[in-house]
Image (tube, rainbow, N blue to C red; front, side, top):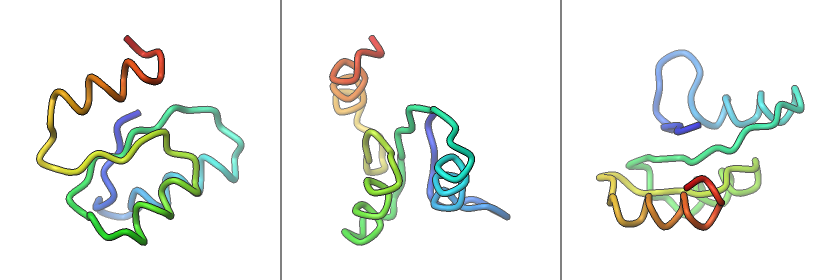
Length: 71
């Protein structure tokens, strides 16, 4: 799943918390302009496999996908 942190109604952190609470298995890659170190640490602690800064760097995305066996 590709997930942004800034969304209406339920933000990305809320989605990650819900996935964890419901024990739903999903590989989540957060792609966000929110580059605050605290946000990145929280995303990691909630189980995201990667945090990629916007604007999206295609090479970084390809590396993350390969590193996690998705391509």
